[in-house]
Length: 315
Image 1: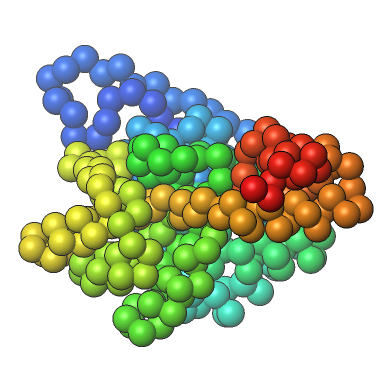
Image 2 (image 1 turned 180 degrees about the horizontal axis):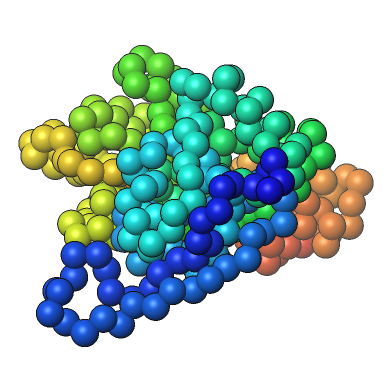
């Protein structure tokens, strides 16, 4: 047996009846044998709550890999047991990463196929996996992404806020002073904001967000894909007031907050900018440049540029 390979075990996963299902019901489970993947590090997304959200490709990789690298064996074992996967587990998290990473890189150097997972969702998003991936790339090993569930994207599409541009912040600082400072830095970002938060900190966090960002539209997305999934939408100040009264909720939470609304440009500022631009540009180019710089509709700026050029702007 190769040094890179695990001891003989069935490389398969099981679909159909779940463990603990009605023993009197006819069994509809069937097993799917899989091949060992090519050597490399496979970054595998796993469900964020509902175990049925796992992809077939993820199951094939988890069952075929030599080792599944996870944050918490108890969490990952529930997923593997659900699908009858017997691949051995290795722990990799913030507290042991410096010691575990060399051992995992050594396995990769021997030709192993490793599957990297987080407790929930896509690895490397708010977890320590990126250092392992970076080290694997630097050492010349193959890194393969297997996309799937993501709490941030699930919340983004459920919130009902613009999705064309968004900024993922992750967790804000735990202390209010540092949190307010970071909120002030996020205030001007022209995009929907996506943040993670814990239940106990949510009321205070929402109060700081409302104080720093005003009454922006927002959504508190809780326990997504689970039995008690909830999405509460409203202005930040109203959400802050609700949770101040209701108290900290339970479960995993994603906050989605609308982008800042651009203030309407002052007509005098537009005229001043147009006069400067018209000194060296054509009407068309001056209007385009000012419209882009000030966030004003180009057609309106073009009409104003024509009026200024014709001397009708100084009534």
